[in-house]
Image (cartoon, rainbow, N blue to C red):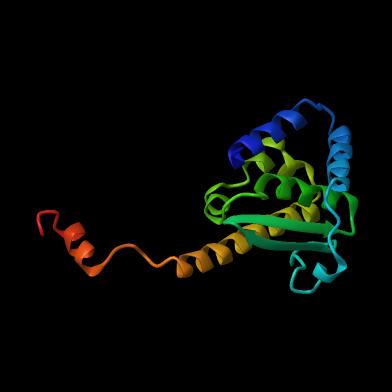
Length: 161
C-alpha cells in the first residue's frame, strides 16, 4: 500500500468520526498500538526537537525500506507520532521524501490542535523527512551512477557514437 493510500485510509477513518473529542480518543488509542521502543533508543540524539512533550523517533533502513520506532511521554503526542509512523513506516526513503503528509491538513489536525501540539507535529514530520534524506543520501553514495563519460557525451549529443 502506498503512502498516499495509507493517508487516504487514515482520512476516511477519522472523517467518519464527526466529533473532535472522539477523534482525540482515537488518536490516543492509536498511540497505544505503537510497538514498545527500547529504552536504549530513547537517547538525546533520537529526541525530536520542537516538541513540548518528550518524543523519541528512531529510524533504520532494512532492505531499502525505512522502519521507524517512536515513543512519547504524552498520550496525544504519542498518538500523533503513531499516525505519522503508520503512514511512513516500511516505505523507501525516496517515497517518504516525495510524499507530503497531506492527511494532517485533510483531517484538520493543524487547525484543531493546540499551537504547541501543532508545532510538535511539524517537528515530528521534519524528523521523519530528515531520516529519509540521510538514508537516501547514503543509498546514493553506495550506488554509483550508471552513466559513464561516454554515456554523458551521448546524452548531450544523441547523434554521437
